[in-house]
Image (cartoon, rainbow, N blue to C red; front, side, top):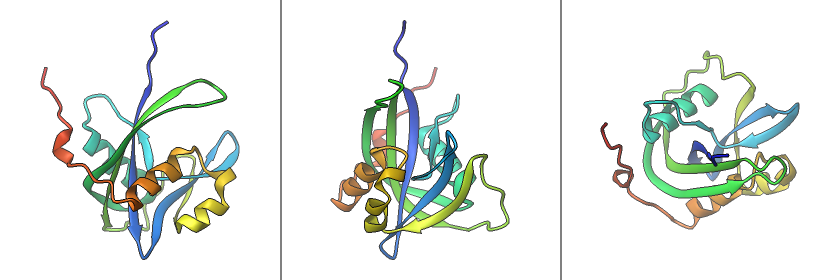
Length: 149
């Protein structure tokens, strides 16, 4: 068996001490997560986080830095996730846009509100990413290199 972690991206967007989050249905449970998702074939990590943020929140996203790269193993199913988290700003809200399947709504939540919802967070990555962002962790976008075939 070959080990294949899921390659994912996430957007950390803060405005007025609140973070843009998605409330989504996962296995018939309401959970909160950053705008996040899988890397598609032939897509850069930056393009993936811009696309995922728009699809899940109807907000345009401009990545400004990387806040961290995380490896997490789901304790129940054993699947591994390699997440690249980006921080940046949102713009151009398209309120009429239909959100991705499973996404109930985009919401703004403070860190304290998210801590109160700890049992409803999709994974521990949610708070880890926010805490790294709040700690000032920033890495340049140009550390990501796509090597041509």
